[in-house]
Each structure stands twice: as C-alpha cells, then as structure tokens.
Image (cartoon, rainbow, N blue to C red):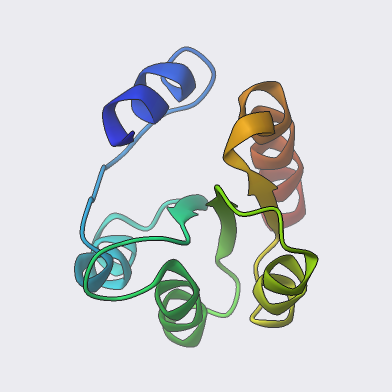
Length: 109
C-alpha cells in the first residue's frame, strides 16, 4: 500500500519520505518537516490516530490527513477531533486525497 500511495502522489506532490511503521511516523515528521503528512490509520506498532496526535503535539501547525479502509463515521469523527485536517477512505483516496492535500497545504501557508 505504501508504494502504491507514493506512486499515486509523486506526480502531484513532493513526497519527502515514506514510513511504514507507526512508531516512526512522528519522528519522521519532526525530521522531514512535511507541510502535509498522509498517515494510514492502520499502522503497525502505533496507530495512525496516535501518530497524528504525536505529530500535532510536536508541531501544532502541522497538517495531517488520515486515510482508512474503514467507513465508520465514528472513526472519522475521532480523527478530526484528534486534529486531522481530513480523514478519507482508501477507496476514494485518489483525486480526493490530492484535493485534500492541496487544501491542507493552502491552510498551512
């Protein structure tokens, strides 16, 4: 999934890093300082929701977009309450993800 997501985003965005382990996400975000981080909710070791909280705790101005295979509105509401800029379904992630990244980027600048 990580490689497919990177390939999908590369023509539209500058992909500055790829991390597959939830425990490494916040450290990578702190080190790489991306304007927008795209984080899967279902990551090994640390959930994407926890990673989102850690990113935003370290940098409250950061923008995090969470993606998920679950369509549960409760999870989306929890993600937004944690500070995520958006929470998108992986099934609809293509163009919608690029639009959300551009929106978050504009909000950050």
